[in-house]
Length: 353
Picture 1 (spheres, helix red, strand yellow):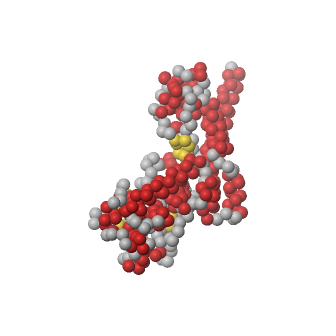
Picture 2 (tube, rainbow, N blue to C red):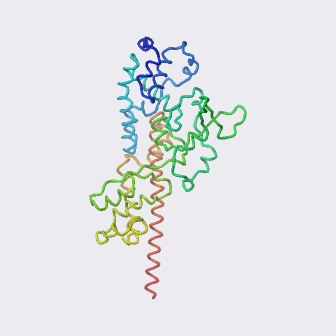
Picture 3 (cartoon, rainbow, N blue to C red):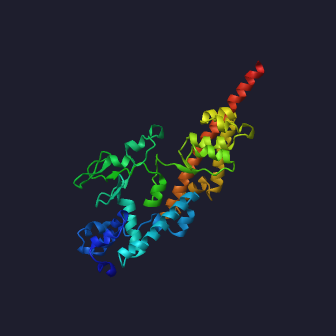
């Protein structure tokens, strides 16, 4: 810490850093001033340590599933570790531990509004709890644009004044809560180190495997992104389109040139039931290969109360991901059953004729 105190003027330090780093430098420098900082009262009540993605131990990292979340978490940690090299040149004497602490303060408390980052002392102390808008939310009413909800209740005025609007009625003496917005659990898990008990905005990020058939891949590239967020109890059209293309019979290969939409492709390929079965099989494969435990295993661990801290959060996160997959599989199973009954009824009618 002495090394930091002997660093030159704070402003000179900030000039050496990118916009998204100078707030971290400010935190480290102000913290080093101790009682001499005008912000000492606020800095002293900030957490001394964090249990978010930057501080997970190896055991928690290993328990993080599915693999793409573990990979994203690894990239995040490596990115912060690598960016420290430039940071310590601007702030001689700073340690990686101090830098990770500052980055964690920003991850859990900074406002991100329209491309800018703000640190508002005191305004980052509210715990998360869903408001009435969250409770009533369904993706059927969603615009598809995330991160807009936070903007409704947080504002920085032209004179620099920061304003927080209440998103609920609060009685005297009650704890103040706020909704953190329309984030997925991956955001809460990686950056905040917790998972909400219920989150209507969560989804499973299904990443599409590449297909060997070049024509099929070209068809998909022009219509799909590399992944789709699967929502509870829903089977999105892009997910079905991928499996409709993947399961398209060789004899119907010409459908790739004549059918431009999912309904037309299914009509041309005459393989709606096969597409539904292929989709269900893909999710079964995901559950078997992306996770080392079952949903019931995780629920039993949590119910037993034998896990705590960051490991408990890791299990809560992966259990939530599996629960989404199971709900989508149930919906697919229902559609398959309805399709079979429809075909059976049609066949019976034809035989009567």
